[in-house]
Image (cartoon, rainbow, N blue to C red; front, side, top):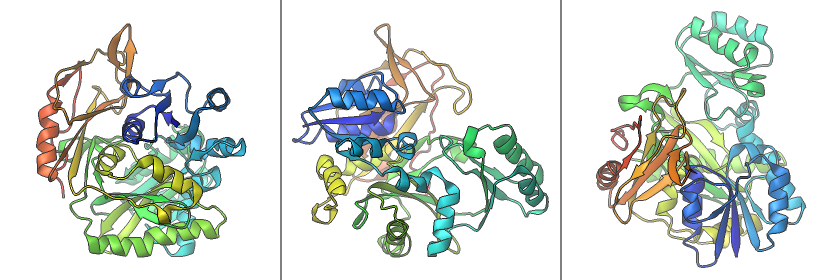
Length: 418
């Protein structure tokens, strides 16, 4: 069988890497892919939102048995719907379910309606009423663009001035385009964060190994928020007792709520959780594999990912055994100088000899004149497995030294925090 993966980042590289282990997968295509993915898949320069060309590609390749739609934008825009309506098998939620990520207003209202614990919030659809609220609100608070904003539409505001600036950026200056047409203002919560990704066919829910991400650009959680500078699994603080509690009070109720709303979710549902002094609260939902969480979770999967995808589509996840390694995994992101703001592209990358079991998940790479170069802010994730977090961390950082490009930077404390 052949599988098509939509997307071109580190998450998609990890998905392709895991699918390649399946004895049932003969060939992998990826649109558009990247230089790393091209080592294991046949890549074509078709963007994830170029639906007409994607559909034509699937039609022209009858060997494709399954299409995996990985990024948020095509999920929200209904690519899975289009594929399925044409009789193709596609993994990922349909647009009606992907709204749980595509609209924060929807997800917050869902949690309020079904009693799923989250931060208190207010929703605003016009600039004047938003500013009026921000003038007298208590700070700190969190201002969020309602729609998809590449993970950057969230601003923690310490003062009234910062709140009003965030409002102007989103609703007047359209910093996040239409994603800021509606804005959510949330109470500010404090506590460690945990990411829990789950496979679900709309009825059965199977959590993956919990992980922890490092969002800030620099050591000790300093600097701007990024798409993620590194991650590790399993989480050090997500105990089996806590996992059972979250499963009963957050995970299952969310899947049941979506089904009750006529929006059955089939795919990967991501729970961004905060462990506050008042209990676990949902920070956000994602309607797909997280990035870079996928790069440490999937290497710990011992079952066949292809079989899991098929079971989710068929609604037979309850009959699909899913096993995980007891090992740990750490991923260190190597980023372009200036990220997450402006940065250069086309910078040559040199990769030396790494340990045999090291996984280099390419996020922003390309081939230019026969040479490997940077093409994004997050460039490569150096991922290592070990018997525990410390062992995996030591191995990852030892191998970081074998990758070089001008301006490269990375955090030196991935996997240390609790």
